[in-house]
Length: 352
Image 1 (cartoon, rainbow, N blue to C red):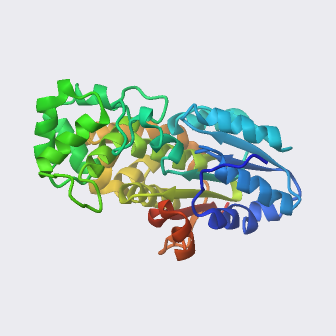
Image 2: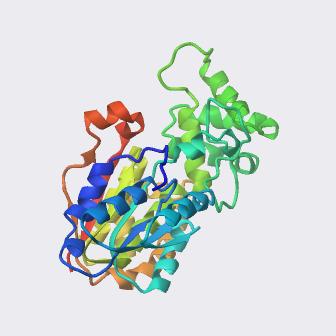
């Protein structure tokens, strides 16, 4: 099997909850259906394939990623295995249609929301603070890039994005500075230098670069990461089989807020529609799905977006595994892979 340099996080935990203790797989002799909706370089999928061989199980793998560079990794892995595999280059918001077309129930599905080393290590993608590159920050299938956004957003919109998505304490000052220089912004170092100027940062030792929160905020906005996250959770709940599981691995608190809110909306039986439950559970965090919209615009967007999932979810029963706690990387894993230190895993299981 092809060897990948990218190290997938929480791998043992993924194998345990996706296959080893998954009743929808262990209780049947039929071919199972697994979905990796953030295929990346294929690390998790390759490990799942290896694990299935230990259990003498066959599977259909439905793989997807919005990054077209993943197609090359998928083809290399596909050459080496006997399982049937399919790949779709789509965003989370388009995944439901792909899954509808398969007309299959999924035994296990997962997303790893961290952006991969093949993205951040490539300076041409514009994610890296350290390595200068074009101001893009696009994960794939984007409507705009960071440079376009910075040249069109108002000061108020910039401030909201930095404050909500970056939790940036100097959001107002940074928005004003970016607005002042924005026609001159074309590279990641142009943006970094503006942030450093606002912070009075002279390159002295600092555990975290002052530009980190600004880069995070713009990346989330450009890629609609939290809005897309809502879509993949609802798509999973619409298609997982009875006893099937959906695994989400998050890397920062904003992602985790959205996951918990959408999970609560799916699990709890209230006298409200699915859309109303999501709006209620997000509450003051509703602007995570669209930082620059008004309250009514964001609510209308949720109402419209969720309609396609409502009928598939409403009459099903779900539970959150390990409720009240979250699965994190062990000390041993963090020593080997520092990327795992901020990873959190949450799991949704369909009961009926």
